[in-house]
Image (cartoon, rainbow, N blue to C red; front, top):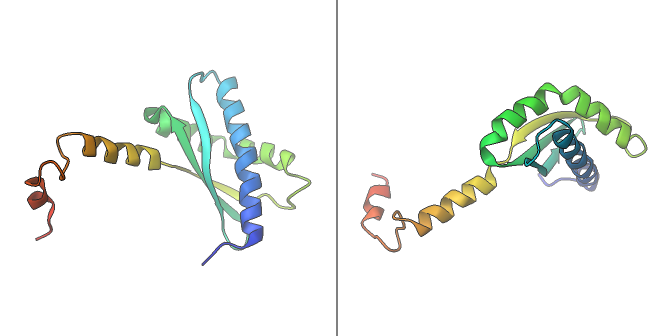
Length: 131
């Protein structure tokens, strides 16, 4: 089912403000050199839950950052509510997830450039076929 205009608008407001809140928290928390971006926000139909997909660079700190974000979810929600109080009546419950799409794309590129390129080495195709 396609998202309504209201869902899209709320998601874009939350995405912009969440990115600012998380990046500010990372710089104040002594995590210099860590880039946190909100890649996508999906709001369910009744506007009660927002699924937030967070991308972290460097990738190996993603799980640690996600634990910190979920542990402080109530503080993040409060800060977000203060920023959006004139735009939203009720703040949706925030659920955070790691967006690993960039890592997935990187792995595909590495495999195409490396030894396991099926275009350059057609013998690999036999291993990948399903029986």
